[in-house]
Length: 231
Image (cartoon, rainbow, N blue to C red; front, side, top):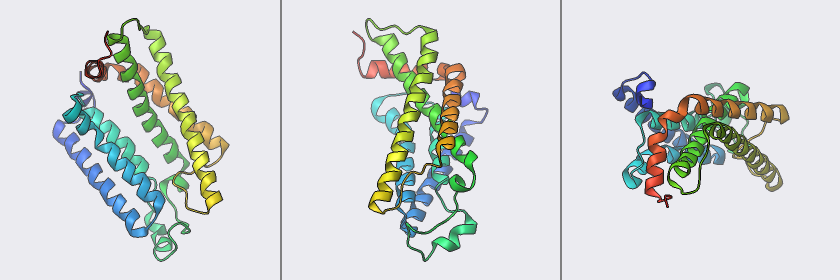
């Protein structure tokens, strides 16, 4: 069963959801431009670019991107971008203030669970990428074999390692912003928050390891054939 069928929504509804989220990302990017806020512009701009990857991979590289996969990826980046936008109650504080100095509430700053939710979603996407790559090597690279049990452990280690790297990047960007006196693009909220982020990263990896791998085999096969890892 393909992921788009597992989602339980018709293709028309899934197409509509993807389109609406892409329009929303474009709108949030424009909000960032209007406010002149670097953090919003960068986060929403990158999210908008990532949302375009599935059709590009399918059209230009022949990688079969199931509509459910596209919805999955788009949802992850949309939720992240949405978390950087000022909540309606704080918009008055933002308009007319220095863009990077304006103190406003976002879903990230007002609700710690939003950060953990987006980490779980993003980690599941990272786990999917890691699995598809490893599966392609397992199937098409001569002399390479990953036992099923190892594959599950590999997915978890891949996600956790990426999560740690991401937290280090967040910390470095935050410290650099303080040193140079500019607005930060990514924000950390303390050690306990970082630990919870890694827990949710692991949960995202477990979800993919247990239920998601069957829906990524077509992608792994196309990767192996496309990039000629067979020998």
